[in-house]
Length: 182
Image (tube, rainbow, N blue to C red):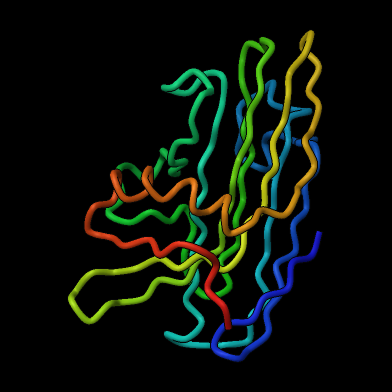
């Protein structure tokens, strides 16, 4: 799936690829995670320097999360520890990569909402994260079989549904509603 966007008058493109994890050792997942999804979202955006800094914010709803699958929660990279910002990936043309898996393979639903954002320093020393676009993806396990849930575009309303969660986890940050336009 390709998602075009415009930021600061410059056109960009996000390409999303969802595939089965065929080789756990190559993507750094545990043995037995074969068959679960890998999600790659690459950014093609020609701005450089500070104008090109973007970040991915990802929230996950899963039957085994703290809310038992009722709510989306922040999905940090656990191996990085607690971070002072909401991004799971950040930089010039940041590449979102995720390869979730579960063992044992019990019946469950797992859904991610992934948003490409632009960080922006405010006039009052509060940093903002403006969403540019978003997509959902995930997987289901039924009778130990993994079914991939194909990526779908998200709307600005989908972003807005996560604002309370983001603001409570990152009180030093501001998360404006809607998608940033040009």
